[in-house]
Length: 336
Image 1: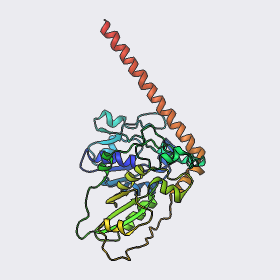
Image 2: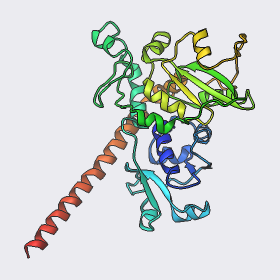
Image 3: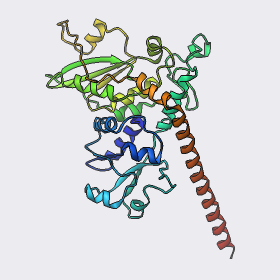
Image 4: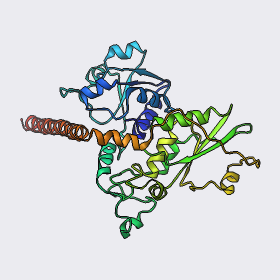
């Protein structure tokens, strides 16, 4: 998948240099090393291109990053998150570049991963939104102030904790300028995907100097009109997902379902009404379709999640053993 955790890594990576090239693997490479991809390679190429910190992408980048790859694209170093990435046979995919001193690390975004999101979609076949009359459910109607261990009944297993700092890091901070065309769109933008990107790109192309504002509905509002276990991502996660898109200037967190005069006035919308347009993005992919992909391949995805967990646990155990060994050796040396 491509999610706001990846965007956050790309944002940090861009801050370490001047020009950011993102290598995106093919479906075949991902299937070999990790399990079935959720988005197709074409979808992922386009989605990564739409992340505002990315200057260029390399399609079909090799799974193992070598010095040869870095030299080919004239890169000084490569960046990866501080989580473990292993090849199908359990080797560190960044071993070579680490030894050469051409590796930098950025912080992983706590509370989100493809494994976690797939897990949430697998919950769709259970019932994490079915307890609507439960007082516990009412208590969390807007997801604010959730602790890191809190499990919101709105988004099932989300452990993501939002901070104002994170929003500031993602936001452009630019005010609309005289001569800009202010365009407002609203929706759930749940599990931010290529259908959303295609739509926002079309919206962006409606004007010479567009200033696109996206209104995001609160979780309970999305649940009211979407039903079932939606939204998969909570309001905070959807905010970052949309802010990372290069076609978006501003986000309204908890926008009203109906667009009223007050909202338009607030954004200095010209008084001429009749300002509504319907836009065809040329892409009919929906969040439902993504969930369907997961459920159809449910067994494969469950196996993928279990395999990835087991592989990571094995590496963590090995690291612990090595640390214990080092401590023992150090103690032995000091006693001589």
